[in-house]
Image (cartoon, rainbow, N blue to C red; front, top):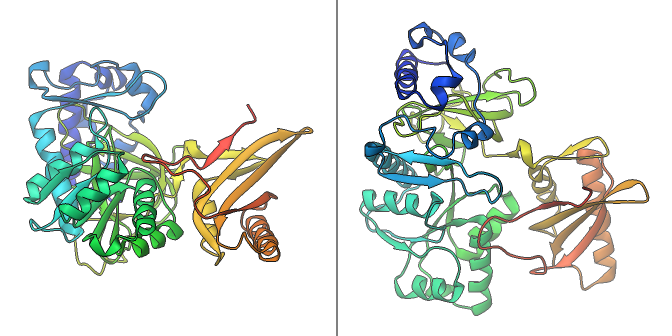
Length: 415
């Protein structure tokens, strides 16, 4: 993506901000004169920052403003290691609400909607971001939080919720439960805003079909405001992101080299207006591509687009010399007619060799001949797509565990 003069000026302003603060970035960028950043090439010579860097700045080393200007703290949702603490100023909170408001408008929401919010609240950024956007839009927010599926469905019926905000895993759990209870006719949902984890076309079609909703992918991460920095429109040609607040790059995750628009690589984000904790060339480890602007979106919006998130560089596992991502399994399953969206991959080590077992839900498990045919089809499809031999296991619909948060797809027991 070609960097504009305005973006360069915003970056210089951010560099001056972190220099004045004297915290993490002032040390990392010691010797860099912001006024020397006159071109995209100059900017691309700046070092990357990583999540490990942000952890090293614990607790408030990322703050680029005096403490009395910090109005809120959020933290990454990871469960291991030192947490990443992200301070927000009042402007940061207001800007986040604005970005989320834009996402809701792109998804076609209005102040007449009733937005049913199931992601978690607290230090995690999810729930409160969905609520901020709803309130700025002027819609009714139902801040349910996760869990208590009985209450979720009761409120959907009684409050006539029109929009469901959830992870794909929890949206599927709710869809299956509504189907099981036979109460779909009492549900008024018309749209679903789904985020927090990547999901394949099989899951998308199941959720959309069982809930009777139009689905939208929303993207974000705690380090960069939270969810609400990108969303797909009604034409589903990628996710629009807000380049007046964020500068996106795509790099080769191994070499750090910048890639051309259209090439798949790792997303790197620089915040252009964030005050509390600006980020400079932050490696997200999310895999996507910038969609070239020579193929404009039919919706006519000026915001550029990234493709759906294929996966994460740190989700990759290497088996028998082959790199495997969850997104590859999703893509394979959509080519197999009887395959459900739900799968799990187990990797272990037996008799000196790696073994990969792939469990996939399907409706054909009751007929042995059909089950065997399904397993052979699955095995052949994986071998053809990623050149690796697996042990295929067909299991009944609903047999694999469901989650109220993010689903784990690959389990590596070799170490």
